[in-house]
Image (cartoon, rainbow, N blue to C red; front, top):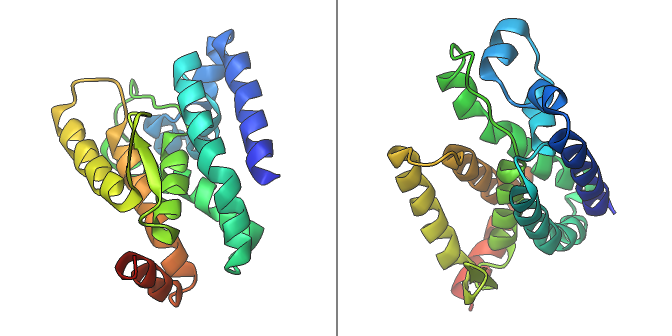
Amino acid sequence: MITYLILGITVVVSFICFGNQTLAMKLALSPYQVIHRQEWYRVVTHGFVHADMTHLVVNMFTFWSFGTYMEQYYQYVGLGKWGFLLLYFGGMIFASSFDLAKQKDNPYYLSIGASGAVSAVLFSSIFFDPWGKIYFFALLPIPGILFGVIYLLYCQYMAKQASDHINHNAHFLGALFGFLLPALLNPSLVKLFLGALIGR
């Protein structure tokens, strides 16, 4: 239910912002505005705004694909609905930390999209099911743990290249947060991960 609620709000807000750039800029992550004008709400609201339909569909389809499963699984292992909310919004906030530090004095820098939060949800699923299949480029099924390694290396490489307008650092940090969160909330879950990883 939480997954569908977040998804629905994100779609509605994104559609509104497609036609209202003033609102989109007000909700976007602007490290300069966050730090210098204390507009801390932006570290969350930017996740409800997307650049275009492709950006929105890719993020929300991925979130829907893994979010419904993770929402149920978090309750199954005792982390509950609050744990799932922490996963999504904590991933979103943590994914913003690099930009807040690096771009705090750049008034022109903006970032939008739920990619950091979605990466957190995806990588939390890898923690619980490391050998579960994830479709690489939506075509090639590969084990989640292998996908995770490739994804993180790719994010690091592309972040250094800075050749596109994608926030690869946010993807990386969100993924890292999502993978580590279950173990931080309940260290005994590390045994579950290792058991699933080794006892394939």
